[in-house]
Amino acid sequence: MEFLVFGEDWGRHPSSSQHILTVLLKHYDVHWINSIGLRQPKFSQRDIRRLFEKLFAQLTPSPAEKTTNDDSPFPTSVIKPLVWPLAQNKLLQSINNTVLKSQLSSKRQPRIIWAALPSAVDYLNICDSDLVIYYCGDDFSALAGVDHHYAARAEQKLIARADMILACSPTLKAKFPEEKTWLLPHGVSLSQFAKPASCPADIDSSRPSVGFYGSLNDWLDQALLQRLARARPDINFYLLGPVNTDITELQQAENIHRLPAQPHHQLAGYLQHWTVAILPFKDNDQIRACNPLKLREYLASGCPVISSDFPAARAYRPLVTIAENEKQWLTAIDNACQLSSQERQNYAQQAQQRVSDESWEQRANQVTQLIKQQFVSNNSDVR
Image (cartoon, rainbow, N blue to C red):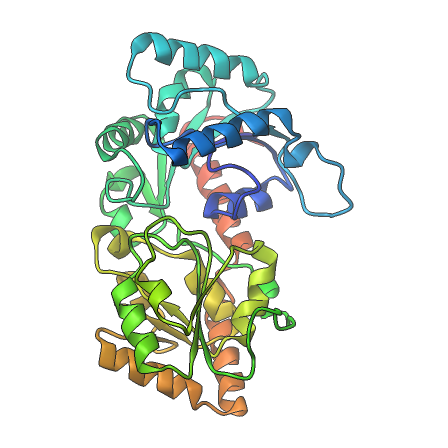
C-alpha cells in the first residue's frame, strides 16, 4: 500500500503525523502534500510573509529531493500545492483540483489517504483512494489562527467521507461516530530524549530554571507566568519557540528569557538541564481536547513536570504535578528545586518507564494493524 498525506509542511517542527509517517515510510511509499491552510489568506503582514515562504519553497528542493548523509528516511515525494486555501468559489475550487491533480503521481498500490487537516476534503475526489483516514490531532473548532466556520464545515464533510477516524485524545474521539473512530494517542521518541545531552550555551546552569518549549500562543497563560517569575526572581524562566501572539506582559519580567525555536533533535539538551519543565495553559476547549507531544517528551527526558489541570496531563499523575492556582505552582516549583541528585535520578527512571511503551513505532504499528483490519472487512487485498 501507499500513503498520500495531507499534513503540515514536511521538515518544519515535527507533528504527530510526521512522526508516525516517518516510521511507516520505512516500509511503504509516502507522498506528502504540504500544508493546505485552514484560513483564507488576507492582506496582512503575516499572510504576505507566508505567501512569500510558499513561493520560495516552490523554487527550492524539498527535503526528499536533497542529498544527505543522514540515514533518516524521507517521503517518496513532497508535493508543494499551488492552491488557494479553503476556496469557496466553485471556479477557484475547480482550478485548485486541476492544479493539484497535475502534481500527484499515478497510483501504484492500494492508496491510503491520511488527512490531518480538514481542508483535505476538497481534494479527495482527485486522489483515487482506496481508504480515507481522518487523523484528528486538534480541536479545529477552537484552534487559534483558523477560520472556524469554514474549518468546522470542512471537518464535517471529512467525517462523512472518512472510512476511519483516528483521534489523539478521548475528548476528540467523543466527537466522532463511534463505529469508525479509534483512539490513537501521541507517542514519543524515548531514545532521543533520554540520551544524555550537553547543556545549551543559552542556559545558565548556575541558577534554577523553569522551562517551556513550543508555540507562544493565545493558550499560554502569560499572566500566570509573569506572577510566578516575579515571585521567584532568583529562578530563570525560559520560553523556547516562535511567537504567535502579543507577549508584552512577559517582557516585563527580567528573569523571563525568550529563546528562538530550536531543531527538534536539540530539545533534549534544554529539558535535561532545566530544573523543571512546565505546561502553563489556560483552561479552554482547545486545551481540554489537546494531547501535547511535549508532555511525553518532557517525561522521556527525565525532567520533573508541572502542568495546568487538563485531561491529558492528569493521566500522568503523580509524575506530572497538577497546579490549579499560583500557590500550588510556586509550591511545586520549590519542591522541584529542592530535589537531590538521587531523587531526580529516581524520578527520571520512573518517568521514562512510564512512557516506555508509547513510542512512535508502537503507534505506527497500531495504524498498520487498523488499516489491514479495515481492508479485510472490505474484502480488499493490501500489501
